[in-house]
Amino acid sequence: MCEFCTKHGEGKKWYLQVKNYTDELLHEDISASKKDTIKATSRLEWTNRFWQAFMMPAISGLSSQVRPFAAETLEEEMVEHFGQVLPIEDVERVIELVDSITRFPCGCRFITTGKTDKRYCFGIATDKWGGLGRFPDSASSLEVLSKEEAKKIFRKYDEEGLMHSIWTGVTPYIVGICNCDRDCAAYRGYIEKTGTPSFFRAEYICQVDWDLCTGCKSCMSQCQFGAQFYSSALCKVHIDPNRCFGCGVCRTACPEGAITLLPRKDILEVAELWLKNAPG
Image (cartoon, rainbow, N blue to C red):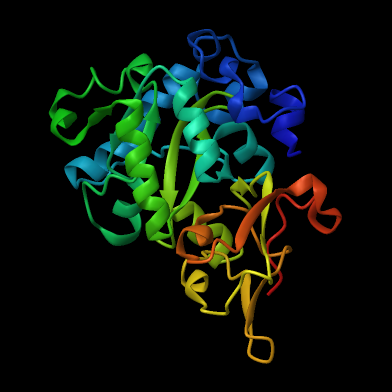
């Protein structure tokens, strides 16, 4: 399992641990070294700064002069603001765990495309860290959703080929789930530009059942990671496990149900592959 599962999940999926969403963790005293890394005195201060500098510009269309986070190394990113890819099944498990979920405009889309009010981000218990009350002018751009409403939207994004990712705000406290493609700044920096990793691969890997695959290639347009390859001789699609991040969105495009998710730990070749960039 990924490093966060060992450190923050007691050997289980860290993002399915209720403790990582609690008020107690949000208000917990943090070490001096962690304060120095995040340039804040508490998780609450960090999350409020993140809201003001990263989310509010996407609502207002006005750039912020405040840096939402200042990590410069992988180690600092893993302390401050780090993510992991989730398949839709685990997204829905997270939704069942949390008290509230709020949909709001994506700061990444504002940075990369200049577009405001593109609501691809979902805050976890945003009301606990003051996001809903401190900025009343943003109220019209926020949607507090029921669990079923949130699941319905995520399933729609899954069908569109957006991969889902869960994010910390001063690890291991979890602040949100995003729906990413190349317009996501984290994706663009890490995957497209092969920069410093900013999220773990999923706890899963995708695999094609060649007995079911008809070679229609419908799944290939869904993959955000360039992991799928077509064999003209065999008329089949192959998924390279070294490139696959386990998001599972390719499954929604397969009319034959030929793609399944397997636990990453069961595939020896990639059991410990979490942060390396896909081979060029």
